[in-house]
Amino acid sequence: MPVTSLVISLSFLFSELDVTSLTSYLVAFVLPALDALLPVVPSETAIITLGVATAGSADPRIGVLVALAAAGAWCGDNFNYLLGRWFGPWVVRRFLSGERGTRQRAWAERSLDHYGWRLIIACRFIPGGRTAVTLTCGLIGYNHRSFMSATAVAAAIWSSYAFFIGRLGGKAFEDKPWAGLLLALGVVLAVSALVEAFRRLRGRRDPSPSPQEDRRDPSRKE
Image (cartoon, rainbow, N blue to C red; front, side, top):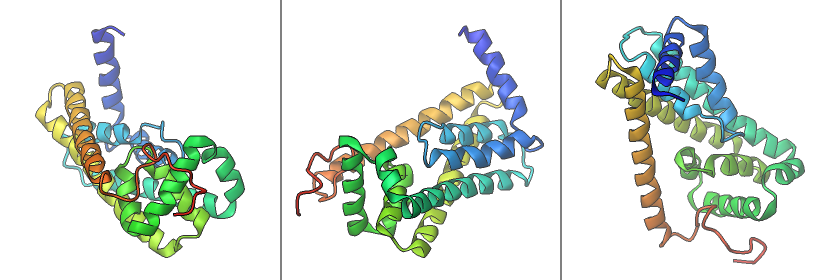
């Protein structure tokens, strides 16, 4: 796509996403909810974009957008929990089967046993971890009240963080919101890279490896 066309497309997108648009509220809630089960949904990018689009506004309804993003993420996590609790065999076949799915489930079970609610909060920021952990919590019957509390904290932190980064980028480039979006996405990628580097360093001493790194047979007794 030519640069000019891309800029025009982004400009149209930003004009649609403001505090007066119903689209903004739908995006804020629906995408984070879907992202829980379908990680390919770009929920974080969407919330960052909302932050960029509303960077020049002090409208109190911005708080509603942040709250809706958190609510969507929380609903998605708890939907996964209920799927795992009520439809365990189907969930295993559909999402946690095969070599990779088996590793993810084994990692999630061991990590939950080791970290508990702290993992539920942290997995919101671990690539590939959120879906495996939330489904596994339902599968193993993790205390639902504790799960709801942990996912509420994780959702609030995540939505505030993504929206703040977006507003930061939008403020830095008020006349070029597309540049602000690129800056915000760059910051998020950098932070994610640092988190991943820290996780890998700690993983060398951690008995519970990540779902990508775990190569052990989950049927083997510890």
